[in-house]
Image (cartoon, rainbow over all chains, first blue to last red; front, side):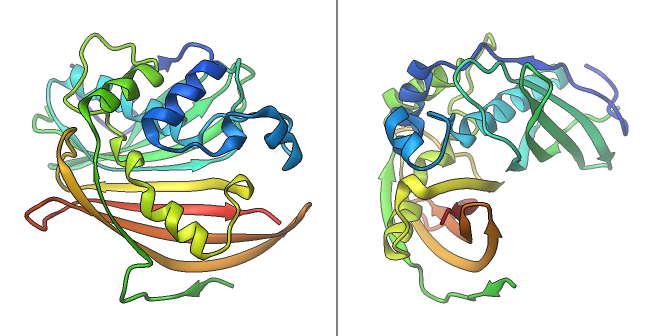
Length: 136
Length: 132
């Protein structure tokens, strides 16, 4: 557990490379069966280079990252989570999630999050509000 | 220019229960790598987009032309698998931008997920982009 102050960084989360099978599983689990995530031909007909990963898959990675961060602190919950999708992610991409503390008060920790692919390109940015019971 | 719609009635309502097996699949789908799994995936609220998909139909947006621009959640109570919730989806605002492939329509959809006691559990704000 670390003392959380402005600028504190959490343990990065490096995800395995995205696979097409993963996108099929995620479509089934999330209910988002948009064919641009599943069918190359449909994706290309809409002007995309091929299937793209669900944006919400990256947001799920943000959720896992925050769960890891809260586990390290020993307690707390996510009060609010937001994500803006900046660039598409594709099968084969290795996404790394990083985050740091923007502000801390007696009740809440505000965090900035980012997702980058293996080339260092920013694919999503996010923000989370955490309530952490112990801030020492 | 953004048009704020101030809806008083939902565009779509729905009832949903995510089975435990689907929640477990969700963890598998995100390649959850932490040693412990919480009772529900942190972003399980994304499985409650039925109202958004109904709203897209009413907006005549073809699903394959839709991209996800932004997402925000306010978590008031934890969502749990095997629990029935009610959803209400509103179209809050609309604006347009010109892009390389034509006009893009942005819609901000709000879905309120409530439990059987009528308590709001999650507020979901989704920005979808309908490509020209």
